[in-house]
Length: 521
Image 1 (spheres, rainbow, N blue to C red):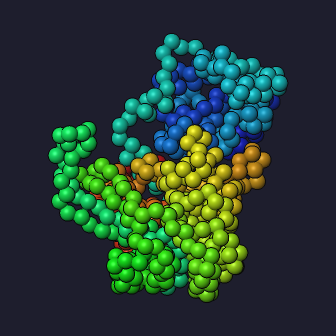
Image 2: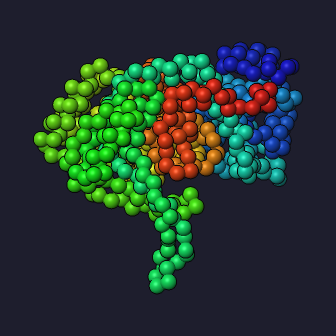
Image 3: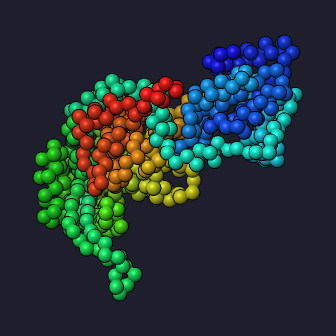
């Protein structure tokens, strides 16, 4: 039988099973991830085939594999096709369930074969599979073999994952219909969108230094200052990104009563950002980064939190609500410096949600402010920011993100995993996922580049791009992809720069996957 004819939907598989039962044939079933088919798998499958007349192999779907950020290495369609090419395999099915229990309940094989390592395994998932087979009169047999191979161990030994990443990126775009034409149409739709950015201004000052070694009188690093460079950060950088992408942008921020702060509105106005500022701080909040050979060795924050008073909250809320009429999106950037407070959000959010179709926020906020920011469409930030906000360093990331979405009553989140890529989480799940007890749908996007760059501030580009993409009609998956592209394009050895719509358009037309992968798939 040709390999592609061995690939079966559930309906086809059950029909073949009925025919085999009527013919008196013994059906053997194997189930697993089969991420990297190795000699251990082949020995296991050949042993299983020798026990009966037909061998069914079910493969866990990509969405059901939780063996790490980069797993599965091979997409489910290719894993199924590889197994179908084996002579000992008769039928192959991609199973979209966490375990094989549902499939075993429907298929009712005569024999279910697992590896010898499961013989004394008390994993409740396997025990449920075993009980299902036995309840329907089947047998569970464990395959032998002295040599034990592991796909996980083999994959961990591979140093270069760029090939796998490019394939996964291509399939991400293919799965969600993110063609160059559709993405280009979205980006061109950014122009003219009105975006309000509310939050803390931060001056990011880079001190470029030369390292002398340790100080002579103490165990301290000795640096010699060469020069320094300043960048607008926080809410200002989000506003600069939005303006560069074509949006009509207004920034609402609290600045200091000093010369540095007085230059900010002039500098941002030149970049197309209107500024509504209050000077309730004594000095500009500044983050000093000390850099040696492009590596950050120290960060020092200058300026403490200065929450706006009640009168200023009322004035700021009135300004934002007046500007919200006709706005496409509102973006909150809370760095804990005091511009955004629970009192401001209580005054603002009920009316703002009625006037602005898309509300997004940075995850780098206090728990109290996240709880007061009810109903945001997207929360965006890094995994570290999420765990700090939730004070949760041990839970699985989807679990921690689900708790964040519940706390803020938010619809979705985009979480940067640094060099490991991006994870999108959506509370909109299918009926089948609800029946399985899944509260959040996850979608993983591998890193778009392995080029080293300064990661500071990349979430600003992602937040701005994702917000405008959503108000332009893009899906969460499109917002995640374009946000990751923007973050990648703005990265440079030092600081970040706003990305233009033209640069983003040029990025979406590049196919991340080489032709050899296209031929393989």
